[in-house]
Image 1 (cartoon, chains in turn red, yellow):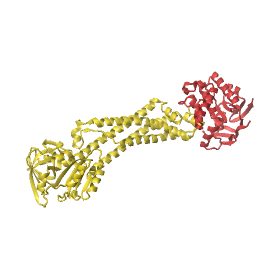
Image 2 (cartoon, chains in turn yellow, green):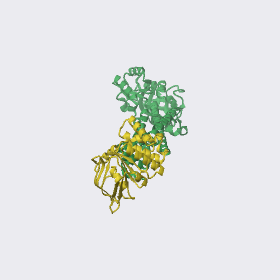
Image 3 (cartoon, rainbow over the protein chains, first blue to last red):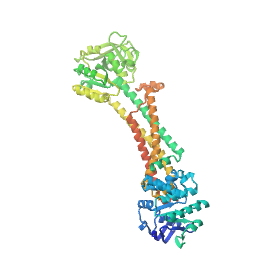
Image 4 (spheres, each protein chain N blue to C red):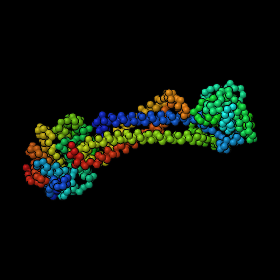
Length: 228
Length: 404
């Protein structure tokens, strides 16, 4: 398996007050292709900051982040937008679907940005919705879907762009136990069948139980890294 | 897809969007109607001036209009009359002899422009007969009848059938005078007609001037839609030794009024569009601020800032232009309907007619005016879209995503 993400001596310092806050502190981490990794730790330990840096949404104060061998730490904003579109899938805690689009259109949207053909967009979106067991809601707007259903659409959207890996920030935080269980099963299936690489940040023990690698952070530093 | 998202976004908050669209409809309707109403005043004034004073065009000896010297009569006016009568764009023609002189009654005397006319021809060209308020149009007086304006009659303290004396120089430079009887009094908004003109029969004036059948002025009216300037040039090219002028050259003040009205319409467009633009910007800013997280998510997923900018612009343009054509159509319908039936302002007729307007006004807008308003709408939509769109792309995805 090849290394997809390589973060080397990454630090992120915020200067919101007079005292600098080290959200991520000299952290080094590699993620291999096909991994199902959970980044865990107490609130404020730097999980979300790390995910944002790995996803190119934020830039490290120090250190280097490489995705597929490409250094994204110093990319320009416009380059990062394009890079994210082609390489990274996102699943957000609050689902963040486009409310005026149907489930199908939401999944198609990311492929539209990639300028894929109409047929390809439709076929892949329908295929993903079927795999996520939500094709019957293809024409429903997000407001007509439950939280679990919306999150499944969000995962389908993240997979639609055929990214190198998917970052999921607390994807089950707003879901009930049944929805969480269903979503995790589906993501695990995608990981296994499609070799999709998932990196989660989570507090949720059920996510940790499903993960095959658990990276634990404290004060912006890795305190344990366990593969199962 | 951007167009679809933008369109659906417009209807996310139906109430708010409908308020903006309603404001656009009412604003554009008001603008169109106000423009048409203003134009009706101008048209009324210009048409009145053309009809009763300048006509659509006039022909003179080139030297005559400088100081109204009667020796500068039109040499071969019959040829010009023949040409005008054969020109389809020319509706009616009349000939006049003119001289400046004095008019005196037993009580007062004043300077006056004495106009010798053919009553029948003049009635067709200037509708002078319609201005009679007292007496009759060259009737009831057997010899040397004269028509004078109401203000002049008041000044001279004369009435119908009163005697007045017109004094002027004849062709040889001799002072000559004629006794005339007031046949009718004219009630006209034009100062020239009501205060300083005396209309006599051309035959009477020519006899006193000793100029035979000669004339100093040919006035003509044209059929609706004629380009009066082009026609004047055409006549001029055929009779180079005479001076042919359209009403625009005869009365630059009317042209100035026309230009002022066009400028006023433009200013009105700018004022109303600016007010609407602020409303649109306000609404779109609210829409952007409500969707900070969503916009951040779009950029996080990989939507380029240019596309986000375009999406907000398209959304604003939709919001602005949905109401525009509806308002314009309702405005067009209003102007067209009132343009046929007229707006009856007879309650204010005394004041209106005193300054040269009809008491029934017919709103009118030219196609170019509608085009100007349409351009105004598009420009407003475009300009109003820039600021909200700029605000949207200034968002940082990471900050926007964490906005509650």
